[in-house]
Length: 193
Image (tube, rainbow, N blue to C red):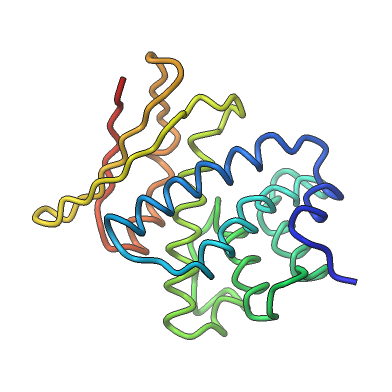
């Protein structure tokens, strides 16, 4: 029997605060990107929601390669309400939220996707990677994310509003690479009071 994303999370994760916070941040980024940069489908939003909840379930097996273990758990247990192809996409988004970049010559599942599916994985995993970085310490400091796209300079600006005005995370700066590749844009983080 396939489990829902929430059931898989409950089964494999003792502390669910971080996954739900990453989901919240991912949805803010997704909505801002869809409105200001590139329209994304409701189906993609649903896929990202599931991946955001499940990205760290692999910690139940091993912390070092938890992203690969998260992918395996999603593939082994499936996801209720998702097609087989959508489950594979969710699993890849979980895998690429950290570590190596997607590689269509090396990575078995990813290489079986068509060009559009590979682009979806890069874009959604790029969003997840930034959201995960914004909650790195699992302390929910980001209150609001506003996205602005400067078309003339091809720059996507992330305006972050924190509950702590002194909070200036450096993690998302290191985690913006996949977003930049997926959306073919440069990312700049700015802070708002």
